[in-house]
Length: 72
Image (cartoon, rainbow, N blue to C red; front, side, top):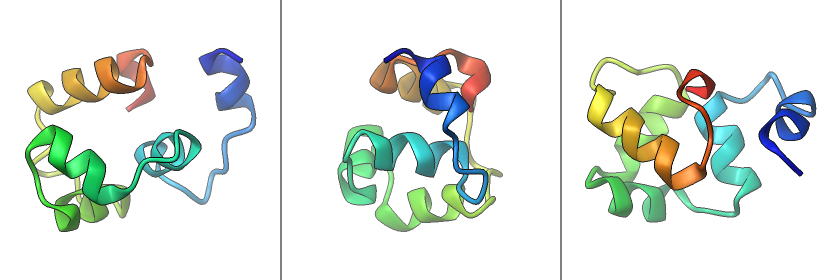
């Protein structure tokens, strides 16, 4: 299954980050540990609080989840 197959089944009630994280079976804590941020920061991002989501973090997310940057 490629990213477009996943995107076609996207649950629009979730943020893109929450969607891909849950699809990959990763907890907010695990993702936060990888990115060097807290679980509460991941939760904030998933709920629309993107103010401190910078390009370095987006690059890490793209690499981690193997998705194009536009996904986020």
